[in-house]
Image 1 (cartoon, rainbow, N blue to C red):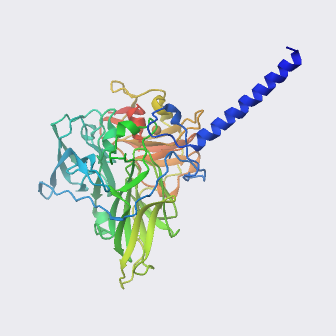
Image 2 (image 1 turned 90 degrees about the horizontal axis):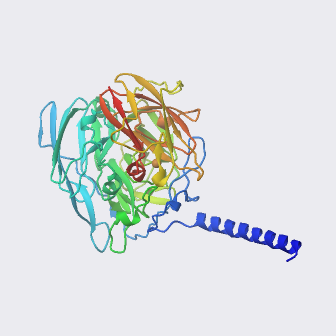
Image 3 (image 1 turned 30 degrees about the vertical axis):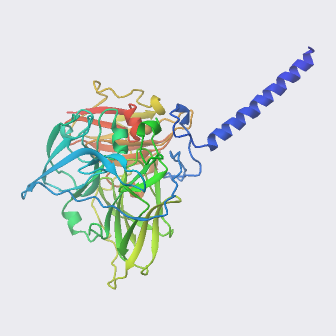
Length: 506
Ligand SMILES: [Cu+2]
């Protein structure tokens, strides 16, 4: 063969190869991954249509499956029961919770096999008061180990319910602690080593309402189920027989579903008066990020972050919550006529239908201007005492290059000492993803995001924050109790894959 022909052939082959590669990459990026494909190449498949807002206006999202709403029927929002105490004195309260399996009717057809606390799916609301001594007994009726983690509560590590505190099948555990923190909407869920994702997905989660003098006296909506609603948002995938089948659909980068559930209700609605209503939003999903907004495009007010009230209400039009994060918002319906419907949305997907069914004549007052008195030192920047780096994806996730090992202490701290931590989300070759950083046993302050001032709605107490790809966040941490506390990614599959470390506090 002549030299020229050979070169031409080579060039043509090369061009063909490039064209085929580009086509493949484009197709790959446009296709949502198959649900049964537990292949690590799913990683990095971000749906470009589902956007989220970063503090600096950059759009990011981990969401890989679109929410579809194919339900014609609207269902009244299920409300978790307020847990009744076994016994209560002026200083102490005693509760019992049973972790159990059962079946739940989410939709027509077969019942779904699920887990729940004192029921078949999710759990009751534990109401506790600042200063109160709480005694909780948990009974494990599951056929596997579980644990009972108090997400957001400032408690000693021996009652925190992390992977160090498994409860065996038919086992019982009692914890005693004093509520040391201000009013907040917290939550509880299991945290057994390597099994958190599946147990939460199957239904184990519930809310904790901490109340104090401030929350008692503030003029805010507080009639449970009337103008004050728990809103636990989760996504699930139902197979043709209405089952969850977690192991079949488990995604190493976070299991998502195509159906939204609020408090275990598909396509939910609430009926309210034309007044201010308070929604206590909890992202109880394994991996999905939400961008909450109102269908009316009107603004709402965020009044609380993870660990309590913000200093003042913050007007918002979109609120992002990553897995584990909470926020309380107030929606003002006072201008609405009887019969008006407004939807709480996640991007373009409907989350909750809010129906005004009664007009009241009394004047709806404005929100209190001052809600809290958190020292306003969010602009303080300092040399970090600790550096924590999140990296990798799928089974390769790591913190400071290591995966979780219960026999290794990763960090040390002293009680009563304020520290600045710098948390990095290493931007890797595949573009990285948002990792929700969660720290046990404390509420911290976000001082700085990538050198920019913390957004107003994050200038409050936090225990879970979004770390965007390539981002550096400075937080201020102070432990008040000794023991071993976990810090980890709250994409539950990342946590189960070892994206977790532990700090010993002395
Ligand atoms: Cu992660």
